[in-house]
Image 1 (cartoon, rainbow, N blue to C red):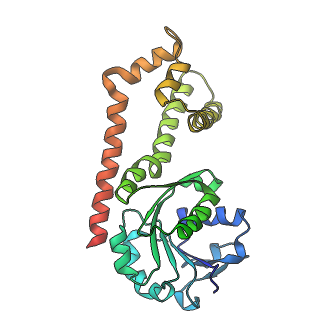
Image 2: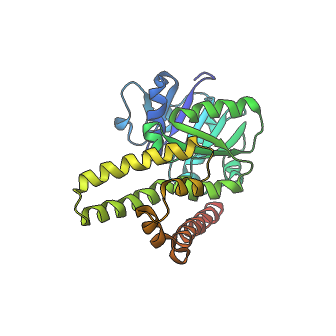
Image 3: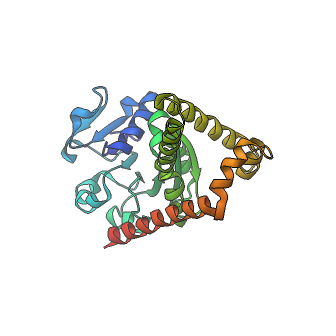
Length: 267
């Protein structure tokens, strides 16, 4: 392997989403995938079922396995991670200290919190690591930009909040969409029509939020005319701060579970 190579360890939901992003960028020749299911990897990408097939130390190793198998996978992978290697981990709740103990020779270790829309190039990835080298950060930014936007955070602790906000966020939005579609159907819309209408509504609203300088509260005011239909619906969501409390509790619960998983990974 040469210094431009990338080794992807694991190719499940998130690893597969990242791989699709890199393939859209024409990177097939740079990537080797290590997975117990190499038959699921596109034929133009080199893949191996065991680490025995990997030669040398790639420039970048991306860990995308289940967190609970890190302890068993790390010893055989250590020979692939040397001082010239950047280790990028998408393992939920596995902190930098734990990763450094598992891969003591790594040149730099960075944790990433991507999300599922990476599969269509519309993901959001939060990054934080134990290196401040500009070249390394730029290299990882380019890699992660292949499947969406990239946000470097000031410290590792902020990744926990990012996990709740953007990592879990798609599932929260899908659940809200499910409720809206069901409510629309109960009012007479065909479920498929309700789904398409609300999917585009979320897409357009997300772009407006991302591209506008206005705060979410200001955008709400632009939609909700005084005494109008939207305001009547908002009155239900806002009663007793119900929505704010519900979302706050959901993110807090996710954060608690993240902390539990992190503690288990350190054991």
